[in-house]
Length: 207
Image (cartoon, rainbow, N blue to C red; front, side, top):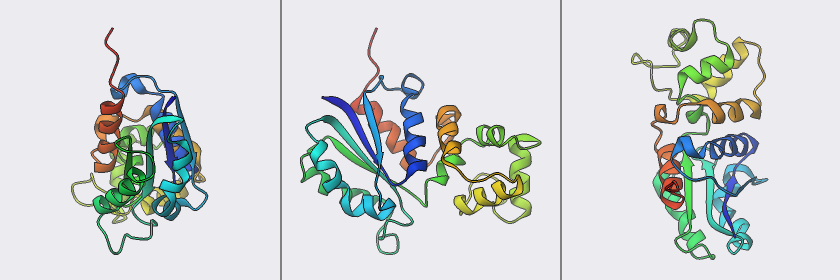
């Protein structure tokens, strides 16, 4: 039996999570035999269909994760993030994954994780002046508050930054940040839940 299967909403998430999982020792869990896949119907597909998609895999993997964005899942106007996670987990529990699966719903979207480590992002984008200059540029355009830490619209902000440097959005950015970003810098609740779940299921091996 393999360790973990991760169902993601798109290629950006799949490559980002895949890169994160290879950094097991830095993130506090043991090396994993894992598979990351994506749902063709994106966030709404994960919300509605994760239990059906992952049901055939429950005997091949010891644990499963379903990851999607809050915005785009189809219930963001009716339910809080935590309740959407709970609904997905209930369906997984009823379809072969008793006590072995969890849902991660990112609010508002995956790009919230991109901004978890400003230094790594500025380095990856080769932004002149580094993280502080990037914060100042966003503040001048009203995309970040006075505290210069939290972005209400992370996807919109990232799109603006990429247009400024004439760089196309691509999954490679998420993969690169998954390999280099400092996990301690990202306070996003969904990201912290992901790490906590991995550390609980797959604790570091004592040597």
